[in-house]
Image: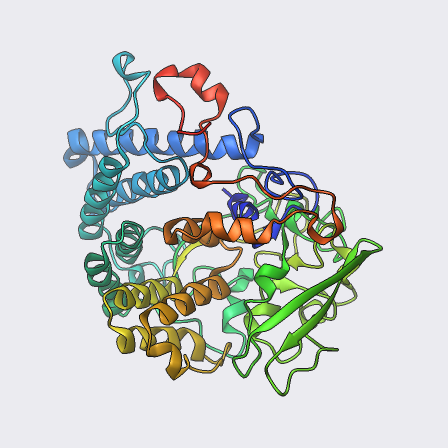
Length: 485
């Protein structure tokens, strides 16, 4: 699912630069049952296909596993992987579309046209599947010296996804218990070194010490194995793919860029002035006495450089020498994406894996769960672990923030965006579970945005869930449509 990071374009964090997934920008008002691009429908179809395959594996293992597997632990491992994947596919489906058919057996003629079950039942099944999976799966340490199996699902992945489910359901005590289990395993750490944050998004850092679960890709053996993200989402100006330029399908916005503080921990504000020659003109302000408005990206949180491509970014010379990027290089915003953009030898043939779960995500979820239980000092410890690692080296959470649960909540929310932007839909999912999606969209997508002739975005609470695509309703009318569509 190499296109899934596109989903952050359905938030204020990014826009489409060219082509797909622009339903929320410049006055366009979201998805309707008839307004779906094929890639978004493919997520629905492929995740259901994944659930069907997992169900088949689980059934066959339960019926015949003892007589088939002779290698110690292999039966448990494969069943644990199938349980994890079924929960993972349901996680994506239910937090995008809500109530769903709960299917845990291979389909029969009698079950071809299921009705939808309550979201709460899907959650119960995810918890059940992941709880069993963590008892069956081995530690990731068993795979790290085994290139043949490196990248397989491990015990820590089941724990981490279960902890995330509890966070999404606001079961904060259960969440903190489960996430602490991941921490106590000792299997993971933040990627070390002065460039550690960025290293994990370069092929040499795949399946590293911070990785908990990532989708594996390999180039040169057919399009179904290679990752197409570079071809579609790289900027056209860097010349890093076979066509000497990507299609700009994801471009960060000033909303995202402004969340990256100065190195001294101060906010920065982009102030739009005008739009000329395909680029937006901004002034930049900050209360940081060392801030230089003429060099607004200098001395910023290093994660900005490793997440967003901007004019004058040193990342270009470091990773793509001989190429340039300016604000005018982007199609809609002044920026392009950096994460997952790597060299490739042919179109749609990137080797780069997609990271779904990593240790920093776990630490910030754990901090959030502690904060929501009013354990503010303890929560801050884990936020500071993420901020203080050598490749980031940002100041600790301010004492004034720690003194207030509401202030620390806002801070942790922003830290998750800074850390996890444009990776695997974290912003999309987080804004929805925090209950801020609609307000953030309305505040950002205002009328006549940046000189465009658009109306203010038309969005309300029903848009938090996407509609079921009409062709899927035609196939199975028993599904019914989400409210408001």
